[in-house]
Image 1 (tube, helix red, strand yellow):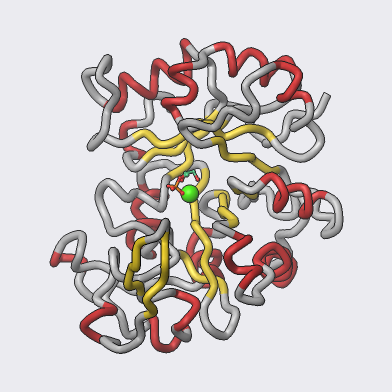
Image 2: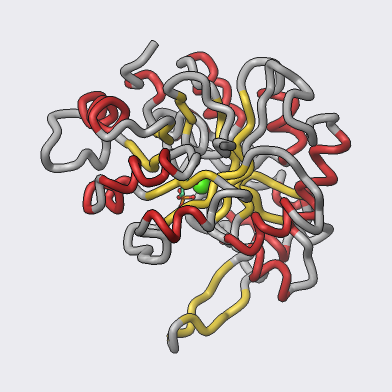
Length: 290
Ligand code: G3P
Ligand code: CA
């Protein structure tokens, strides 16, 4: 039975890079993650105005850059849950414009001038030194705006010769998304054979039985929030019985579960007592398996 992620050992994925110590999704954070022994480095993917994939967690730029200062007029007011919110969206700026933003100072002045990397720049930085773990982020929102995120991811991997499992043994690639539809499309219409992980949110009730998990087999392993696993510990056994890998998120020293004294102890519990196969952490240096 297929297990949908290529783990041959307990596996460390640096969440947005070593984001506990350097500004998330900067080359500085990716380099530090590799120095701290990450097996994979995560990239959350968004798309620029001209359709270039860039590495950023949010749909908009204001949390992690000085966009409001550099481009004060480039916002849109949008209705979210009946409330008007003002955002500076990634999809409204070109790469050349995003490169003018400081993506480091919000975290610490010593990172002033750090830039948002394109995914291509991230691939070049990481390739040969760790695996890539891209997340297809809110593909439905990009689809409404006329962008095809899944196709763009496949095209970029193809341009880099990384679109097949085993293409570069030093650079394995795993695709992740909260969108089951998106991952099914990768497997079906786009005929991509890279391993996939279906992310499950903290209150996601959709896949919490052995029967439902069996329906995931064929397109992905599962990637549950750690609190979903805490509340449903048999989930790991059911997933393994269905041939699915389990990749838990997110372990960070700034938000350790109440029962644990530190993030290393928390990761040890999830890896060895709950038996997850891999996990995302902001603190790669605290990963307990070496
Ligand atoms: O992709 C795993 C984890 O990163 C999901 O949460 O919001 O940090 O992308 P988020
Ligand atoms: Ca992510």
